[in-house]
Image (cartoon, rainbow, N blue to C red; front, side, top):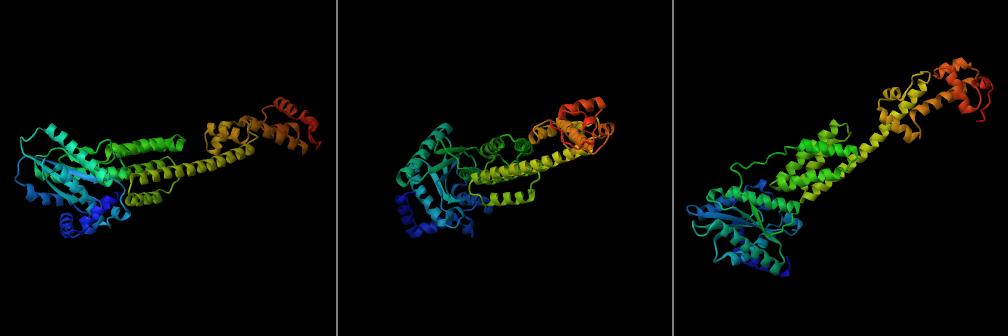
Length: 428
């Protein structure tokens, strides 16, 4: 809002009747502190019904409900509901312009609810076909948006309901418009048009829980633990929640909670050691305190990065422990002529492929070559201590003396018999 808007709001606030009038329209209940909070805290749709009941009850025709929402950033006080009248007179300005545009064209009733301007238009039967009403309202709402921007630098979006034949259905219609407005503010949606059409709610308005949460979480955790692009997988689901499945900021938070709970369950099932209870508590706090959707999505990506880092570190420690177990198993079982990488992997509690990769990574050689080198090293030590060739061959796991002779001479350049008892270090 520019300086002209602030001056106009100040003038409206100075009018003695304005504060009383708007306070009556806003409150009509005794909880003014909650008026700018989420609608779950106070049933303002019921307030709307009683506000317009006497005005419209008994009139015939169709009704269209408009909700004007100022989408620029509010102050912290306005967002948290402390500056009730600051927001109130912001919408008094919008109402002035809306009356200027709509007066003479439509019969309407306007009021401010939930910190947004609500206007109910009445179209008697036969006054104009539905298509003409829609086109007319698009033009009128575009004019309100343009005047608010030009005069006061205010960014205003209008939410338009479908025509309603029964005034008693307006409470559900209002709830649908209000939830769409809160969702768009929460997700910082960008609008190609100043008018947003909202479908009429079903007879029973209920928010379905996230039906594919477990499947989506399983895909994410699989990508996360597998080292694939888990951020892209998460973003795809988060976009679906915000753009397709949620119908209000509160339902979006609940869907996010379902998704995160499913992520925690899948991480636990797949053996990731994370502090799920602490993460759940943190998620509840972030969701409760968040003003914008990006606060939750950014937090989730940070959690995923942390989990990935901790999982990688734990994997490295586990792989090192398994590799050390494999090395110890080899040294303890050199006398076994059938010692293979399969036996070593079983002894270390890991897969053959993982152990094979570990040998190449840690020793820059294969398991088979490492076992052969360990046998020859031990054979040299035994021969230098005076062990017989046959005994050394058996203790080191060579299948035959011929194989032992050939391998030993290839390695050290002398035969086992020549080395026995010499105490010398081979030249080769």
